Each structure stands twice: as C-alpha cells, then as structure tokens.
Image 1: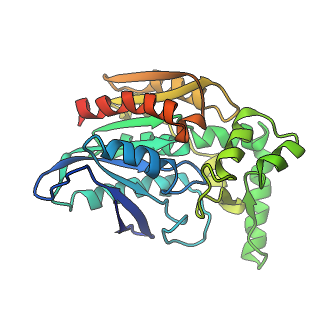
Image 2 (image 1 turned 60 degrees about the vertical axis):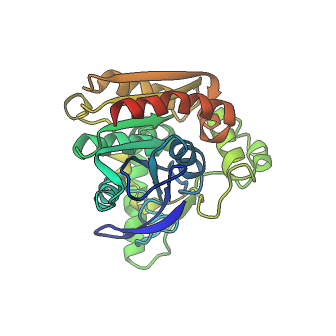
Length: 306
C-alpha cells in the first residue's frame, strides 16, 4: 500500500493505493475505486477490508477520503455534498489513467453504505467506469428525507436555511455528530435500533474506530443531500454491469430496500443482487465471515467484467 495525493478542481484528495501481491510495474492491471461510507474514511472498510481483499485477488485498488473530509483538503470541513462526492470518483479516474500499470479499459468502482450510492451515481455519467458494485449501499438523499428528518423534510430544510444565514452573518458553524459517544451512551439514550446501535459499536469502539471516521456533518450545507437521488435516471444511464450486495438483517438506514430498488431500476443488462443471509449492514463493514462471502461474489464479478 502507498499513499498518494490526487488533484480535484476544488480539493486535493488523499488516497491509499493497494497493490496486488508480486506487483510488477511493467505489467498492467485492472483497477477498482473503493469509496467509504458516509462519515467514514479510507482507513476503515473501504481500504482495510475491501481494498485489501480485492488487491489480494489481483486488482489495483484506490481507497480515498472524500473531499472536505479525512486527510483530503477542501473548505468548509465536514461537508457532505453528493454532487461533489461524485466528482471525486471522476478525479480518481483521471489519476488512474495516468498510471502506466493500470489498464484504462478495466476500471471499476465499489462503494460501501453511502459510498455505494455514490459509486452507482458516478458510474452513470463516468463511462470510463466499466462495472460497479455496491456493498450494503444507501441512497443518502432518500435517507435524509426519511430517517434523518423524521419523514418531514421541509421543516428541516427551513432549519438548514436559517442556520446557513446565521453563519453567513457570523455565527459559529453547526457541526452535528451523528452517533452517540459509546455503545453504553447509546443504550442510556434508548437507541437500540439495529443500524444505530451497530453503527455506534463499529465507529465508537476499537473494532472500527479511526481518527478520521468522525461521523460529523456541517448541518447548514446538508440541503444539497436532502434534494438528491442517487438512483435518478438509472433506468436510462446505468448500463454497465452491476452487482448489489445486501445483508438480510434489515435496519432503519434502508440498505436492503435501496439495494432492491436500484437492482430493479438499473438498465444494466448484466446485473445481480446478492443477499448475505443472517448478516446486517454493519456486519458487512468488517466481520470476516460476511465480508468474505461478499468478496466471494464481488471478486468474480469484477474479473468477469473488467
């Protein structure tokens, strides 16, 4: 693994490149862009699990921090803007095609959670991406309008607008932390829903905790996500091979539902949905058995389509 900087037109993207065993720079390899979940970072599941797993199977893998997050540059910090997240993929493709050891006709994309929705959306308009896989992928726009706004988005949009006005006039930025500080705090608050409790257990303990996996959002700029749909025009534009992996232990963040929606909607002639029986959204982040089962499907998918 080596760390690199990738220039985007509004930031510098920090990325880790995972190389296959016995890597030979004189050869060419298929490459996969691996995108982290919402509020996560490249050192978590997109890099240390799926990046490593795919590299061991012969792929060059680029796991990157979203612009405005992690080790990537960009101001304001903690910005979660879907359109800019999609542009990150295109900048990474630009970088990959400059590498002599990457086969430009064999570039794929993979994303976990919100990164899965972004990967799918990016693939629709980035035709240099030849195949895409989503691991427990989530459509952040749908999530914002429903679970994250109590199914009542209009008052939340008004609050975001008011906060943005206040900040323009000198108020301190509002940074929302999406999760409790510990599993014990989640229990004290009565947050026992499976996705919330398991997210806390992953991000707030030694299991998955990393310095840049902060789950913090700039509230006043989240209106862009509220009005976005990761799957808009997929029935027209998403024609590349698609694999959707979901766990069938269903939680409130809606990855199972979103997975079946995009599988049904995509225009892709080659598409497959895989249910990992008995496992949940956050199990598919790092637990050896479910992530192994996911890789058993994703690896041959990419080998067949890249």
